Length: 455
Ligand SMILES: Cc1cc2nc3c(=O)[nH]c(=O)nc-3n(C[C@H](O)[C@H](O)[C@H](O)COP(=O)(O)OP(=O)(O)OC[C@H]3O[C@@H](n4cnc5c(N)ncnc54)[C@H](O)[C@@H]3O)c2cc1C
Image 1 (tube, rainbow, N blue to C red):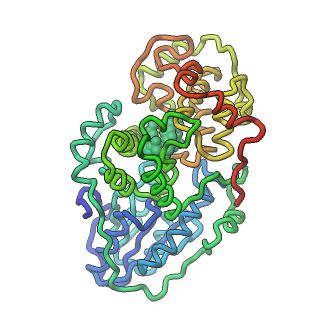
Image 2 (tube, rainbow, N blue to C red):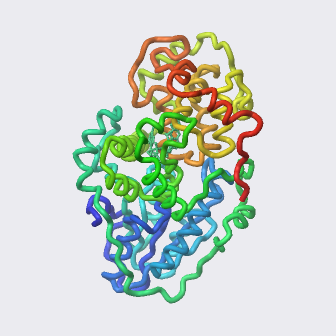
Image 3 (cartoon, rainbow, N blue to C red):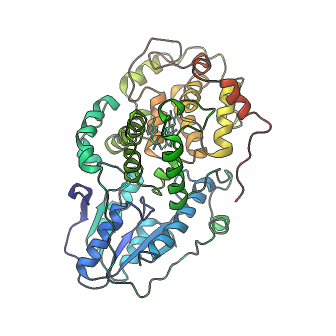
């Protein structure tokens, strides 16, 4: 079922009765539980037209490097195969995504359907296209379990304020999405770039190649294997094991969710087949926390800047900006994991080598950067830079909110301390109490820890 609230016309009008329906794939790079795809199939069948898909591959995506592009290309490889099995040919074209979509529409589209993203650039792309098309453009929201605008019309203060709103609605939206067969096949739709070998294509792209691909593989197939492994092997015990960075206790699905290789609906429905406290804890992260991040980037125009942080947090950090810092490090020293703190260095190495730092260590890692940087503004910039450069799931609404949380976003004032003021503080004592941090430091020691997968 496609809830009406998921569907929003960006350029209203009546579709032409000839040509094809065009699916402009941008955020939802998958065939399973993709509401934009199913809406496009439904419309193509109603109009008795074929459906074709297009993806604009821009080498200039902000902050994206080879680690991110490798994952993206693996997703496109799977998408082409899986769409072909639904009789929908996919064309991948190098260029500005909305321009690529406009050009494709110019070949005879009756209607253009796209998905929804929650960052400024993604919104601008859709507005740009809507202003130039001469056929209707409809966006269909599939990256959130519940459409962001339905949950709330304003920026929420914290998880505690958005949680009841989400809980009230989720039974209406946690419903399976039916896939229909396409009635009419497209005869000719050129595929554009050859994406059968993502490694080969990656090498040819004019992008930042200084960060190698991460440990995990992208794409819809890998996403579903990981989900199945999580549900069968790790969901039971998730609520306690996910907080121990020395064990593999969380789902590791964040990058697949970021790239749209996995629908949050698929993950939530699979988890709900195993009711219990671990499933509740997983749904809290997957839906409440993740969609709180979408709320922030949707309603806070400064979401990616220090200025977006709550006023109380900025005021208290600035009041303490002149406090003495016992250690300070440059961005390069931090990037190279050259600090006096073996736990912090281990976390940094886990991230740079694999593309994934454990959630618990992300919090400690971020708090220390505030402590070791001359000003909170500089700390914010450095933290975001490191996060988005190395994390496979970086450049996501969760990135800005995760980093923002370190600076007091969606949190409350705590006891006053030097440098932090009333922003929450974390020290290594907490790590020692909660798990075997020495083991974690050994796992990610300077020598001997796993090197990144070569592709
Ligand atoms: C400083 C800092 C930076 C962060 N940067 C990112 C980032 O760049 N990208 C990113 O996706 N997450 C980020 N997070 C949030 C969180 O650390 C990751 O989502 C989580 O570690 C992903 O691992 P997982 O998929 O195994 O999570 P699981 O525990 O299996 O959770 C399931 C899903 O719920 C969502 N989720 C989990 N924790 C959070 C959270 N705290 N906030 C919002 N959603 C959550 C994710 O989509 C995740 O895949 C950051 C947190 C901090 C403190």
